[in-house]
Picture 1 (spheres, rainbow, N blue to C red):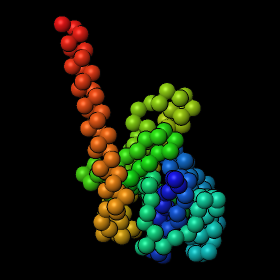
Picture 2 (tube, rainbow, N blue to C red; picture 1 turned 180 degrees about the horizontal axis):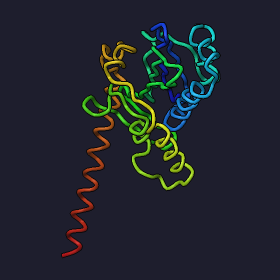
Picture 3 (cartoon, helix red, strand yellow; picture 1 turned 90 degrees about the vertical axis):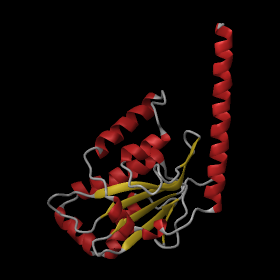
Length: 219
């Protein structure tokens, strides 16, 4: 199963550039976003000004930063399916002096982590269709240290980097990708929710029985 992630970018001319990546989630999604931000911070101003003013150059840079392998430009209106969330970047009104890019991540219902075998149905009222910081998005995949030094260190490094960046407000997210807020849950999402609820109920029952057995053994 593909680990599909979408990237929505509001360009300086307010047009929306959308990219679909079929193998991007968790740490990798944040590393790509970090590379994007660093590129715009470190590249000389005249070149950035040229890129921002030229649609073809901008499209080339986006595809280059997110790698051509496994990615393709898609419609921001009809290509909404994903199982590892959305990266949203706002370049409208980009200031060449401040070099600040506002971003957020968003779950549209499902976060399916191949790396840790974790599966989440992010119901409305929790993290579904909310403007998430990099830290919150990452914690969906790694709710606690996993015990692997390399993974845990990379998580800390990414959280530290994005702690200095600005998260895009939800009101702006709705303007950049309004279609997500119009669509109804898909059959796949409904099936996933049902499965997760059953798994949760089974786990709760198992925990309850274990506590009862332990209590009886203490008597």
